[in-house]
Image (tube, rainbow, N blue to C red):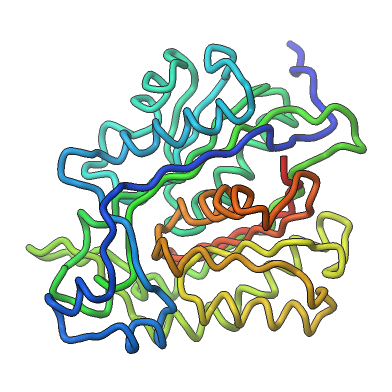
Length: 326
C-alpha cells in the first residue's frame, strides 16, 4: 500500500459564470407585491436580478458556467479528475447535478458529487477541491456553484421574492507549481445548527423558501467578519494584505458591514469590495464566483490580486479562504 504523491498546494486556473437573459427589475416586482424600488434598495441594495425560464434546468446553468471556466483556464475537460457542484436548489435529491454536469462539460466518467452548504457552498466546494489536489486524490477539479432559486420562491412573499435569483459560477482548481505559488489558502469553516430554522424550505404543501430576515441579518453582521479574519490568519497574512473582499452577495448592507469590520481590524481603505448583488440579486452558492468573474471583466480585479472569499447562509453554514486571482 502507498499514498498518492502530494503537491505543494492548489490554485485557481480559470473562472467563469452564466446568468439567464431575463431581467426582473424592482419595478416589475411592484406589479406583483406591495413594495417599491426605494424600499428594496434600502433593505437589500438590489436593483435587478436574473431569472431563468422554465425550460432551463440547474444543471444547464452549471454546464455553461463550467465550460466558461474551462475556456478561461485553456484546459481540456477530458483532463479533469473530478467535478464538484455546490447547490441547494436541485428539484429532486436524486440524481445529483454533478454527474450530469461532468458529462455536459465533456468530462464523462470522472468523480462527481454535489455539496449542499447553501450560500457557503462554493467556499466549501473550493476547500474540498483544494484539499483533493493537495492530497493527490485529484489533480484538476472543476468546482461550480449553481442555483435556480426561482423554483423555490413564493412570488407573493415580498420578504424573499425581492432577493433571490438564478445563476452559476465556476472555477478550475489545479496544483500550484511550487510552494511559493500556492493560490488557495486553508479554509476557515463552521456551522451554527442551533439557528437552522432561520433559513429553510417549508415542509408544507407550498415547499417554498422561508427566511427569518432580521435574525439572519443580525447573525451575519456579527459572525461573518471573524470567519474572514480567521481565513486571513490561516493563510499567514494580515488584513492589510487583502486586495479584494468578495463576500457572499446576500444583502448589500451585510456586505458593507463586513467590509467595515475588516477595515477596523487593519484592512486597507482601498480594498475593493464586491457589490454584484445590486444587479444580480442573491444567487446563493453562485454569488462568489460570479462576482469575481464580473469584477475581473470590469477591471476591478487583476491577475495576482489577493482575494478574501467568505460565504455564509442556510444551515447555518459558513466558510472562507484567501485565494490568488488567476
